Length: 502
Image (cartoon, rainbow, N blue to C red; front, side, top):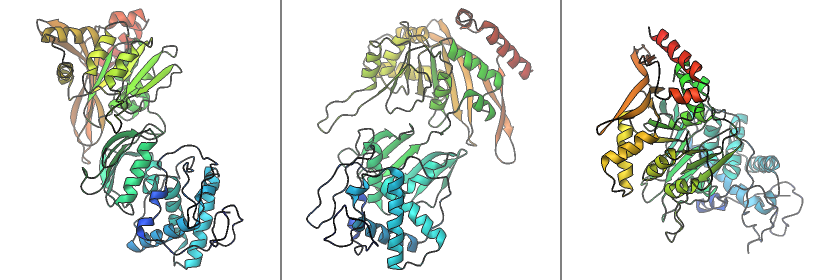
């Protein structure tokens, strides 16, 4: 059905033994034939070109799930040469318009059958394991994200960093290591980048070489393409685990103590306004996801993000996402636009995935006008620096307010700052749970409830420490906890933490 045995055969004819056309030139390696979008398979019938070949399907078929996890093998140059020849012959042989009519599993099986025929006809000398690797790679090239598929399937990988076609790095357990994965060339890498970003209605090319996007599971994607990236496109993926993390799991990983986790659960439950502070890769978004698990299921939540990453479990959630400008420089929707629009949507909580600029003023206003329990994340290295960053971002918006007025707005809006950090051994820890108490003169007063005390490191370089209480038995949000009936639970958690520290 899909092999084209001669120029007179029809696209719908039954498939006999495949007789592939000789490999095409490298410029026709088939990557350009892969559509950049990832919709459901379509039965759209496409016209054929003058040479009898079917034009590429506008709606390609993709696999329903990633292949089983497996480590990339060390591959020789001859393997990639063979793969290039087989791929070119496959594109010349297969009828993409008919392939688009199949479901994902059937399309994968059809491609495997034709590739097996090509290998047999061309008499490539390959072991069974090499042939299986080749079949899987080519199916990923046609139907998925190519060489990235085995890495995306491995749940222990936190980041994938592609520096051009020949260098791919991953982060596992907080450590960065180089892999043996490579792309055929920079054009294949760019085509896969375009396929990823087009799923969320964005583009990356010479006229727009920087793009933020996301994978279907919410994993964060950044692409910077030539001419800005000199050695080929640079692709960075911050992967999300398939099983969403909870605070109880963070306790098992040592990110927070059981007593500290109990305090965080109460903070999320009693609708404190929370800012999560931390550096890049410190786990801010993960912690924000964990805190939202303790929001009552009957609350209306609106999230605002540059690329939708948050994975809230509540039923009443509205997810909003910013939009970059089009080719004419029009149509941009900024984070400020989203946050301001939230106020007209009757939210009970507003959650901003990442506060980077003037939208902080709108978020503070929302926190201070009845939307208790709102949350956001900010890049900073300490709770005190977080407060300074918020002041700076308010000034970025052009608000000519006195410094004292801005600080009074911050004090009246933010209840708790949670500081996350990525330590030098790659582990992630919650280092501060800090309350914003009030002002003395022009100075914002804070008090720490929980601190992480580093004790040292072992022979393997792993840092050891302990979460300790600062001895405050009645936090500033005590009345709020009592309003929600959580004061006994809060007192028990703080008392237990003091006992552990002593």
